[in-house]
Length: 195
Image 1 (cartoon, rainbow, N blue to C red):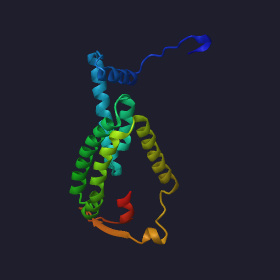
Image 2 (cartoon, rainbow, N blue to C red):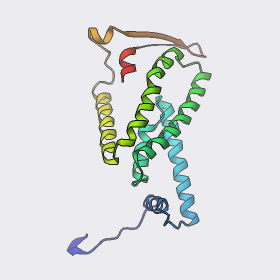
Image 3 (cartoon, helix red, strand yellow):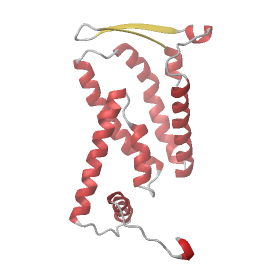
Image 4 (spheres, one colour):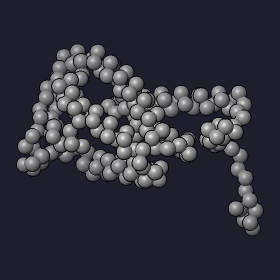
């Protein structure tokens, strides 16, 4: 409401039209015009390109970007639907990134397989649990996890692991890529597998 109880109606942006059109179309009541469909497809292509480039650039599949976008665009969908779409996109993004990094010989296959030993069962368990979470609970959990990760990155971006328990199972790797650049890195394997 504006001043004096007068309702103020603002013009719809293309993104408002997109969201309204997606909501109506999911309920079978939407009557989209051709230009609206073009805007939607263009926006989805842009979102896919952004998620793909940024996700591969930082070494993740991009789900942390795509989930909030899908939660906004599809307010009536279940967490299971949102995560299944995200996992499908993440799979193809990770596959294409893996192919590109494989050509550059920048993949530590041994560590990747060790992480996959717990990641695959974890994904199966997560797919089972997501069916029991309401959308509200899912959004709070997802938001809290993103905030915790962001806080960690802001507070401790360059510090090395210290302390006996953290260094006890430290794994050190050297990887030589296709251009003969040597990458020296280390990580705590049990901690990484546990997370």
